[in-house]
Length: 116
Image 1: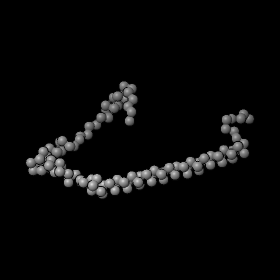
Image 2: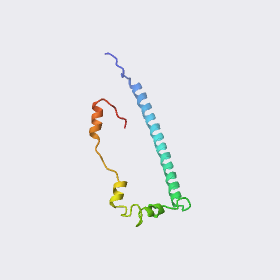
Image 3: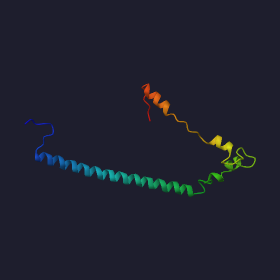
Image 4: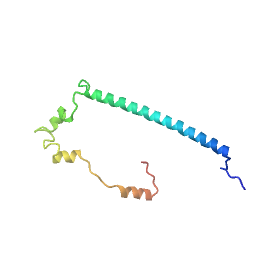
């Protein structure tokens, strides 16, 4: 019988299986610890953002409708006097979707690789 690359004796198999399990356990523990560290950082970040947002000295204007510039825009004599749902504000502030899949297909057909 010809010995292949992966022909292992029973003892070798047990060694390989034991090492694999050991590495898997160590890797799982490291992954769990790294996830916990990331979640701790996310929690600290949330606390600092919410704390700064609640502080009126840092953010005096917390809502856009309280901003004097926005109020001036939407005032009776303002640039967008029709209001936020008016025709003029809609044409200026909203974007339009254009399907560009045919252009991408044409580029791929020419052999151009697009980075996403």
